[in-house]
Image (cartoon, rainbow, N blue to C red; front, side, top):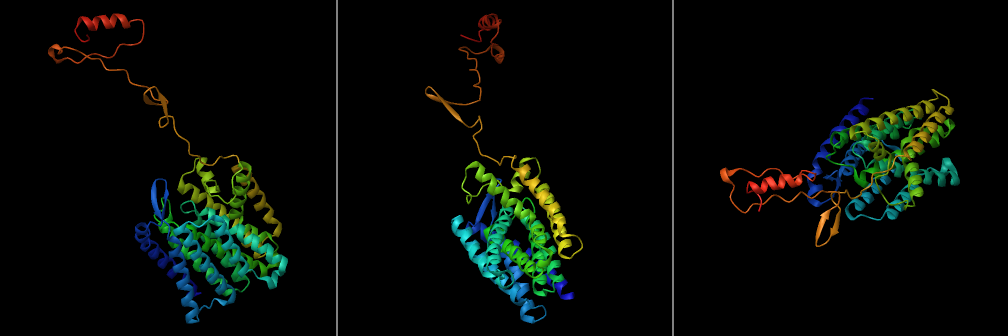
Length: 384
C-alpha cells in the first residue's frame, strides 16, 4: 500500500517535470502541430512513457512491486508502439502503416491461452478499434488525459480484484502519470501527447482490459464494454460519419466526439469536464459489474446511452473550412473587388483652397435632394 502511494506520487511528479522539459526541444526541432493558431509541441507522449517506464522499472528492479509477465510484456510492446508513433509524428507515416503497427502489437499481447484462437482474433480487432478510439481523443486538449486517467484508475481496481498485482500497479502508475501530464495539457494545452503518447496510452488501456477480462470472464462482455464506452462511441461515430460522407475511413479530420461537442457550443474546458464525467460514469458501471456489485445487464444502460450519443452527434456537422465573403474576390473589370464588401463613395474634391480652412461636408445622399445639395456645394466653391 505504501509503495503504491509512493509510486503514484513519483509518476505524477516525474511526468509533470518531463512534460515541461520536452516543450522547448520539440519546438526547436519542429515536432509540433497547429491548434487554434498556436504551435503546440507533440512530445508529451515521451514524458508519459518516461514517467510510467521509470517507475515501473524501479519497482521491477528493486523487487518491491514486480510487474509480472502480463504487465511487463504489455508495457514493453506499448513502449515499442509509442516509439513507432513518434516516428509518425516526426515523418508523418501513412495512416495505413500506423494501423498495421497497432495490429501487430495487438497480436503480440492477446492472451490466446484463455481466449482461444477465434477469441484471440476477435481480441485483436477489438484492441485496434479501441486504440484508435483513444487516439482520436488525443486530438483535443485535455480529453485523453482525463478519460485515460479515469479509465486507468477503474482498471486498476478491476486488476486488484483479480489479484493481478502487476497490472494493478501499472495502471495506478499510468493514472498518476496522466494526472501529472494534465498540468501541461489542460486547455489551452502547452504540450500534447501526439501519436506517440496516444498509441501508448490507448494500447495499455485496451490490452489491460482484455487481460483482466480473460481472467474475470464470468462477468461477461458488459464490463470491458463499459470500461471503454467512450472510446467505442468515438470510433463508431467517426466510422459511420465518414462512411455516410463518402470519405476515406483512415483519413483524419476534426470529426471526433470532442470536436462535435465544441460545435454545439461547449468551451474546451467544458468538453474536458463533460467527457470526464461521462468516463467516470461508464467506467464506474464497468467496475461495479466486474466486482459483482451489480448485475451484468446494467451494461445495457451504458450501451443505450452510447447509442443515443452516437446517433445525436451524427446530426452535428464537423467543422468545415470555407472562404468568408470578405476574403473571396470577384474580378470586375481591371480591378478585383472583395465580394460582400461595399466600396466607399469617392471623396469630394476641390480645385481651390477652402476659405477659413473648413472641411467639405458629407457626400451627397442618393435621394431626391441630391441636386439641391450639389448646387449648394458648387456655390460655396467646394466642388468644381
